[in-house]
Image (cartoon, rainbow, N blue to C red):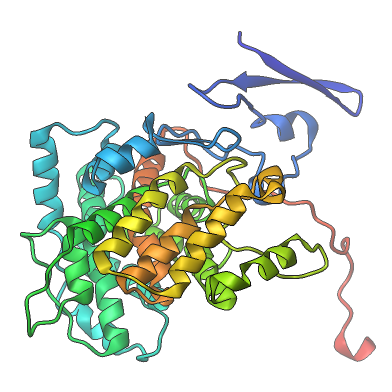
Length: 427
């Protein structure tokens, strides 16, 4: 028998098995705790609870480590492509050259959406938030693709996974085009996944669209860096929705809805808004002092991270990408100079070093996306586009797990005890 965790409850000794992962903290198996003690554990936000067993992504926040199937995020972002990372997350191993070509081909043949889906967009107001459109349209996919909603069929699950990854850029680009009153562009299968998305977003039917290599590379990196991030709020939402047996399109729509929250997917938007408030580099010292003042509500957005207590490993990759994009796009906006100066000051200020408030991936990605030409309303949409592969991989893993049960968190009830109903004329 392995290690045991022993504790005493109401004079009764309780033994719980200790489960070991391949790396990271061990976990105490409390599945039989209620049966043994009549008690639940209390863990708001589930921040100390392992809700599942997973072989996809590992994070060590203290050391600033992020691994996908064992591969460090820095290596993947620098040397790999988003399509390769998608294959890795879905299948467990990096693809051979032939496997990658076949996967690329499969995804590119699923990029078009049903023609009737375009009428959905016309039902939204022009000023609808693109995330509102994404929630509705992705949820509606289950009404168009009945042949891939049987979750008990591995082939249908694979087809649904490929469809979601392939169609998300098309759906996202259509949301953007609709908001600015431009015609939708059909996918061009001769382009890469990322190049195709850029063309569908910024191209117009009247002229050729040139994909800038530096911009394509930056977008691909942003997609890789957002592909999966362990059991975060939106991923947990996808798993929870999926645990009921809901179809994959509904589950991903639920994940998008959760991601929409400013505390989750809206961080890069908030970071850019903060930079706009600061305005110019000469105003930075004033805002730095405000950030240090406990009585001032102002906070530096894009610094520090809920999980990473060290440097965000994803931010390291984005740091060099910023300049590459600025140079390629010939960007001279003072906003970007303010961002680079703020980064320099924060990295050398003892207060920020002591508090470990380093720039995170949201700080850099917001700047890059703005330089490329995306409005802030599209930032979370791009996050959803990239995270779809993580959601899909996690959903597949959960469906394939024989130990999977429908999600059913418990509670600490603090409401009124049982009481009798009193007719309204006697109250």
